[in-house]
Length: 346
Image 1 (cartoon, rainbow, N blue to C red):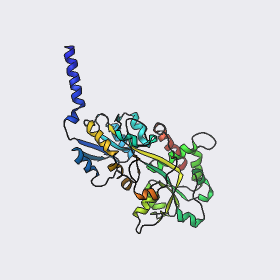
Image 2: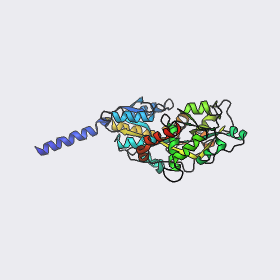
Image 3: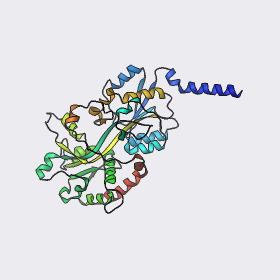
Image 4: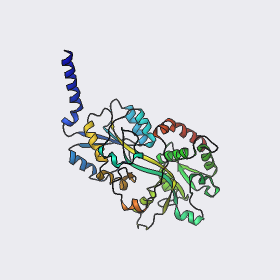
């Protein structure tokens, strides 16, 4: 009897493991943040090739998306999650949101983007200081060479940042300062921010208010020449300008850049894990990867993916971006934001 029971158990397990593949075409629920955009035909090409259907579920920003997935992990809201980034990855991994999977195309991804066998790097972007080239030249002021320069009186009232409690680039910039100045020593990150406050720092709640409302460069309508934005902002200014300029109107302080990597993973407990693996594979394919830059204005993780010419000509990437381990970010994120708030918005 024991042998029969064991045999039946193994058969049931094998059936369960292969169920999604055996049943043919599946519906894959793809959970993403609200900034997920792909060209028409990209998802449809995957559906045509595989017979699967992709149901897109947009769940707010990255933090909201991860929180919702944690609250529903016993009955997952989807099958694949895309867009969990460096700032929230540690929490997602600690909560066991994803099952292990490593696609064959992972060898096209730089080793430094990989952090776990449970998530696959899909794209990366750098949050950096941007500056108004003409605005600083007219004022006779050079762009800052590094973060510490921002405390110089010459930059008083000339920097706008976003609140890290309400803005993803604002949080990334805070993390860049933590990584650069540290928490101990003679000049920790808290002292740097105190000096920025005394240098007439301007703070907005979000990126759009800072870039379009306060910044004087490119599409900005304000009078502040330095803003926290992205390394991809200069090519965006060129692409969307009419008439198109020969040079980007904004520059990037490459020593200030904090790298955000976006990952995709299969949510543990997905009933269509086999189909989900196919979608992860597709997201690393050239067809999907080459669609990323001009839609989400970040860089493909697959090094073999061709870049649009604007991303070759007008992007300045750091030789070595600023990073922090996801686990360290997760362990300290809330405290760092609280301390920043006490210093900057008392």
